[in-house]
Image (cartoon, rainbow, N blue to C red; front, side, top):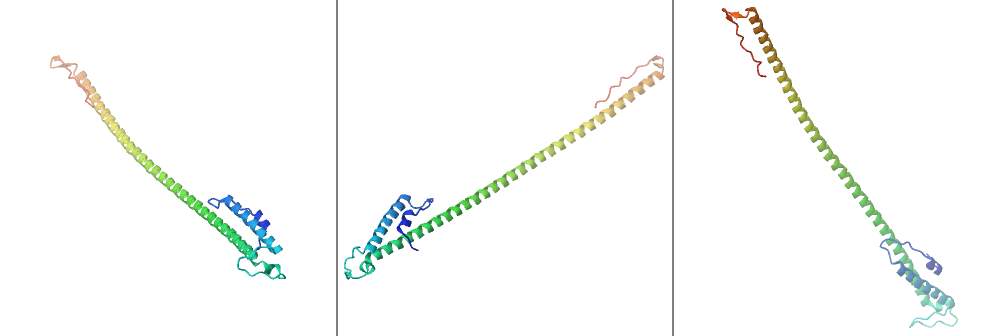
Amino acid sequence: MTIAPDEIEAQQFRVMFRGYDVEQVDAFLDRMQQEFTRLLAERGSGTGPVPDGAPSAAPDAPADEAAPGPSARALRTLLRAEQMADQMIADAEAEAEEIRAQAQAERQQALAETRAECARLHADLTVQREQEIGALLVRLEQLQAEVARLDDLESRARESLRRWIDQHQRLLTEGTGNGGAVAGGSAVATPVHPPAA
């Protein structure tokens, strides 16, 4: 992969959460672009500095052979830039995957909590409804028993009243049939009271 100084200068990176410091990356790219441009210029002109201890190039040697130091440095700089770019891409992809996984886990947890809460509310409502229905059934049985007791009391009261009326009418009839006198004396009617209910 070949990189030109213009590409280094024009390279843009997305700003990611917990990523590299943008200003530091820009400053490093600026320095690398300047150094890369300088090395290319030195290589093209053949005027680059010769490393200490390196043999001097012959006057008629080609430019590439006369300045091996700057070329090697340029290559190393280029390789480091490519490695850094690859590392930044890998870090960004790993971070994005981590964020996606975390968001998915949070969504699953929220969904599970919501379902659990719905199930709990449904269970509470079911228990409350069953309790209310049970209380209403008990009250209904109590009212039915009370109605039955009142019906029985009314029936007995009616029967007692009917017997009292029949007895009273029978006594009145007997008193009228005797002419109102018993053994030359006045007939005395025995009072009859209605029976207690």
